[in-house]
Image (cartoon, rainbow, N blue to C red; front, side, top):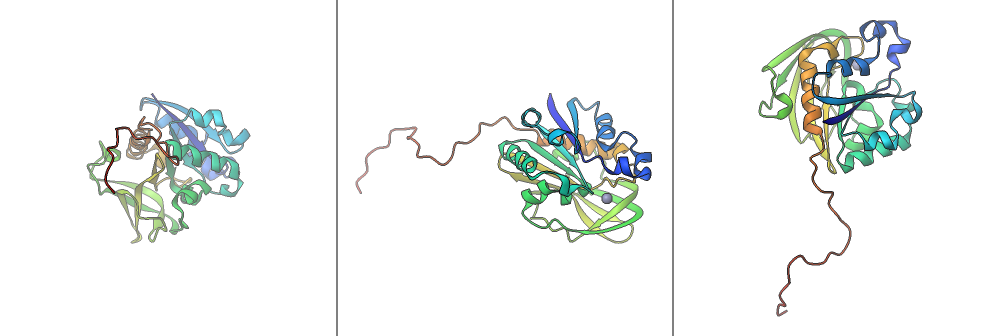
Length: 243
Ligand code: ZN
């Protein structure tokens, strides 16, 4: 069974009633509940826990990490970011949601500014599947709508994604690369755009389907860790050549 850890900064829900009304137990618990029937072994972790809930032991027992953060990116300790980064390089999957585009870990993995246009107008978002053969799109319709979402618009300052699975259209005229995959080291990364904290996005069946598919896609392959940086003996006899 894939071991999933859902990390949420869990600050908006405690400080803002408007958010608490939508996610009374926090975004992490809403996601855990929504993914409960996906055949995953699910744990949660939050910023205020010791080591942000991401101890060596927790990360070593995590196949895929989901990351939701927004107003407290700066409060995530650099040492923990390094620890998560190392695990991604070793093969841990990482799913970065919505405002996690500005998290320390996502910016470090992308190497770019990761900035974008935004607008909080509660407008309709239509999410189009642009790679229907991709496993993250399995079981989804051609497109689906979220009646109220924050707008994220291009240009999104990321490196060219390895694969583009979703593109979003917004009522106000903007478009966005809303489902992007990346490979870093042995790790697979998926960025998925929806999930503003004042909208009930993480209760939407299609959104949950995307997240559950992406966790399965990002799980470690089980391939051996390559050994690098040393002179190696030949595997077959090397015949002497005239030079
Ligand atoms: Zn937002």
